[in-house]
Length: 597
Image (cartoon, rainbow, N blue to C red; front, side, top):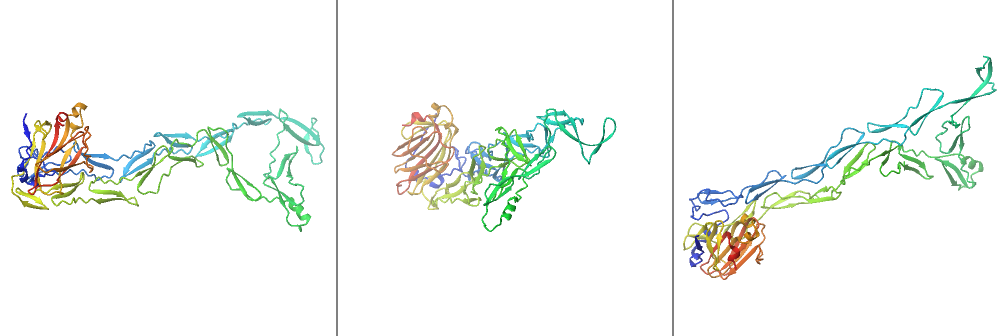
């Protein structure tokens, strides 16, 4: 196995900074075939599915792929291992009785139409299935035939006519009764008589008074109700009698009258009113017309105003839905409850209605809905435009605003651009051979050609403290010179190899992503910036992060790092006058547990 030792001698001071501080968009092979004017597409492969690998006259470039979506209902992203990912927006509200869709970036939840076109059924949806319950027109009278037509209940009397004039036909508890008529002819004298023939055929002046009786001896009386609640209606055997209700309270100081069947005794305030007037007024009823034309209310006058009391249709059966329709009580076996907590259920006189619950909170930046349990849910509007180069927010009118990011890092020796996938990218200025960037200008310096190379997989790498690890893939080495303290040098590296995230516990403890920096004399500060922009905690936890430092080195071994592009930021704390040489090595290695102190 080939063993290579990283050399950090004083020659590093003369290495051109710009040519060695390579951005993440350049990849170099071991032989240097990817250098300017001598490369192939295979040489430019950076093993990142989120970049396009291109060989140009100037060398390899790896620009980020454009994974943007024109459809606001599609969320676009990029996975460094698999490439562009398009995920449809999840608009499911968990309610099987709604059709969920996305339009213009907003979720739409349309109620399933369960109308079967039959006005005599109550249509509803439960668990995604439509149900059509027949309206219950049962009026509780067994002597009527109940039916529904065009949404209205009809109650027809059962026909008990047996076609026999000698029977009294009636219905009781749903059974027809046809009782024989008993004729008792009573003959009385009368000057205005009806002529009838006797047994001998002689004409006699007689009046025949016929009285009908049922077999049980109970006479059938006519209906004497005159529609006046202030009269007592009776039958005296020959005719109806309507006696005025007696409202006299025996108090001469009150004016007694009847109003809608209720006695009213009003105090008489004027002593000048003569007795005859008072007496006449006592026998006058002056009930106002309180009819509200609603057959489902009982209209009355309480002495001061009209009262309209809803007709009580409660049949005492908790299993029925009781209501009044056109004056008739209807008792439906099932209520209008559609078992959907997100609807308000009621009856409109013809069928059940289920109005959606109003969950509007008045905030234009929330998407308001009902969660299926009757609870209103207010989800903040998603204004993410899928562009990492904008700050996304929602204004008071509910409109999404996208403000461009300022990627200027204040370093004149970096090219600051924004990538729609990764956000701000700071690429060091690349100067031609023999020059380096100082304050934004490429200046000539004396020194050797820049040193940037890769160590092939399978190589053994001797670490600064004497032990070694094995390269599991090609390790990238950058040698350079830093001239100015306070001006950080940034290198972008793809981390999150599947080798460090998969495998058994014992195997994963031996594998890690290595990021190591060595220098000649004066120390550097090192910071690792994760893909989300946060800085990795420098404290080692010996589990997922192994941090090893010495007088001239600073190494990280990362297990299961976040997948994506990390930034390695280095800065000399006190560089020598001629610059401070350094060497940066990155890649996946094995044998970590036995090689680190």
